[in-house]
Length: 207
View 1 (cartoon, rainbow, N blue to C red):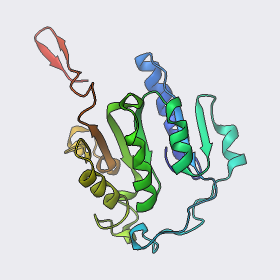
View 2: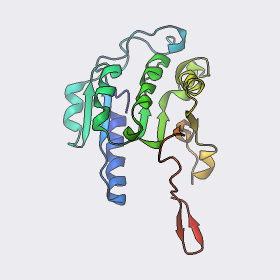
View 3: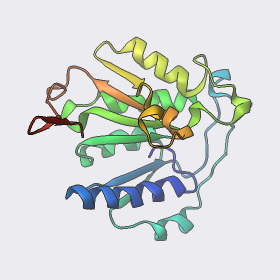
View 4: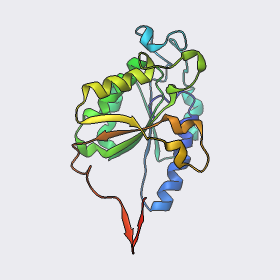
């Protein structure tokens, strides 16, 4: 999770990862990155300073740390430094929750996809917290996370971040978060074309 703040999201990821790891018989590490000092100053209108500003969401570190399990890691400091220093320890990266609010912070964090392809899965699922609420943000592709996503796609020919088309209609019950799930496609990843469809008898089962 990029942008931990109070830690509720990180704790939710921790709980979900335990269930998934148990079901599939795998190991999942959870990582949270935050300055711990709240949000930095906005660069300009693209960071939506009428919604967020410097010092918002400062972390209570002493309160959060005892609540984390040994498999959940909290990394404090400037994400532009700590994220890339820590990336070799995350093998491979499969999911990112972006909760950085600002356009500038989100754009900088996309550099995580510039590393060696072995550091990530060919398709990395991404959750973008700040693409819907609050209403006063009037989210659009000229500001905030949506602008960062748009520019990423314009600047990367072999990579692209797109929502899962019509995801809400694939779920038993549609939820708001369905509209916040995207996938970073690494089209030239050596394993992008690996078939993940299971054939059972004459039936095709999609995982």
